Image (cartoon, rainbow, N blue to C red; front, side):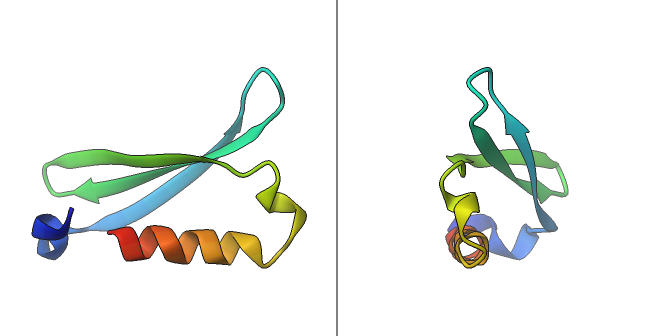
Length: 64
């Protein structure tokens, strides 16, 4: 990912629930030539605290 840092256009995410009602967030990186799936995180337990989501988002931004 680091060698593409200057070409980064946007980071996006979306949430969904699986058949077991667990909540996930998928993170995508958008480049001029397409998009890259970065990671999926099970946030079922993270959603219990308001402070945990910003921490998760900051970690993902640091990865990119």
